[in-house]
Image (cartoon, rainbow, N blue to C red; front, top):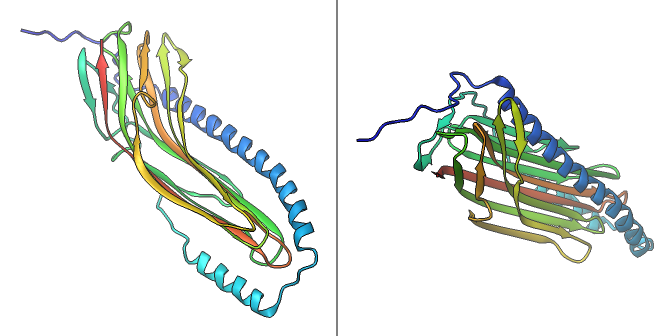
Length: 291
């Protein structure tokens, strides 16, 4: 015969500040990642443009070349894809028992970030455990310009151990798939990147502790005057790369997320670049062993 020990911390209603804190931390972390990428690309763009201006200074745009550039731009516009944003506010909190625990959606909350001159479409569904980013960076069409896009989305869940001193091994089944295309039609370059991430905070006696994040870059690529770049892949964010091991707290907030970004440019003579990104993730269940 077994008896169930009451949790030392079992909130009837999760404090609002808990998810607010998780959302704020997610936004700050992804905002920092965007700023680092944007600053890097801004300086690289200066170098790229200086080199390109020397290469094309003696070239002109013929009527046939202009017609081809316009046709390619029209085709690129037709590849824009849209996702509808969905928000679920149900908060229920997962309470554990010693041994093996399997958690499935609905999870507790959604997180999302949309940055850049061309905001991406971010999907996050706590109801299904699915999240993703669809982003396009396509500068123009009429004057010199650059454009950048950056998005991140994910789901969060609150985990309450049966005892604050127990150790948890948290292992998600984290699927991901992506496709991207970076195209240069002339000298302007285009770039894109994508990654998946796991983050966790522990809470005890009103204090918060941040554990090291787990992060995995899926791709980083770019096009140039000589060649385009494209790719697609799918797999699982595997253990131990996505595994978390924690102890000593009354409850934890875990966030599973992905991010993607891209940039492109256009020059006055009509040459342009574009980047298209689609990143989709799913966490259908999380296995937690409590010791």
